[in-house]
Image 1: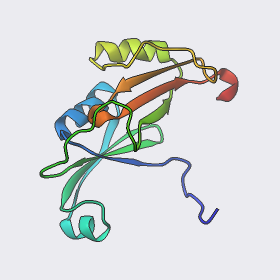
Image 2 (image 1 turned 135 degrees about the horizontal axis):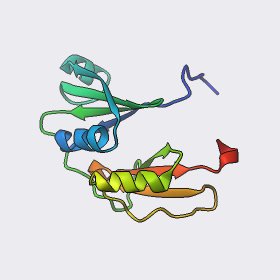
Image 3 (image 1 turned 180 degrees about the vertical axis):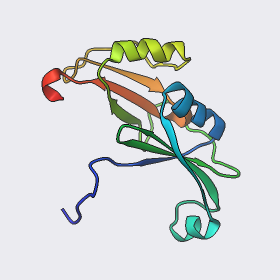
Image 4 (image 1 turned 90 degrees about the vertical axis):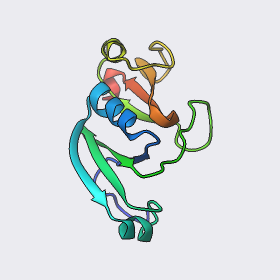
Length: 145
């Protein structure tokens, strides 16, 4: 491997077509904790090829997972939940998919199906996140934890 990661987790940055909707989903519905808000100046955004102009970034954490939501003037249009190229889903490992499904459904989270039993875990279920992304919740077998 040409490099070594300093942390076991990978942060994910999401360009939001509707920032308020994304913040509501990840923070208010899923329960991620808002840990930082930062303004990225145009020079940094352009020089690092992150974005065509300045943007606001809100960082949300749950365990070791960090999601960075981008609010930018004139955002791109949203993607659909249809199958397409690019990142399709984020996987979050949890201890009780059925209970989580019930709690998040009460908070208005829309799911693709009810929890199902795959061959490699106890249960999985996918929630519809903004901008066409799916959040896959996986309850692993005890021996896989």
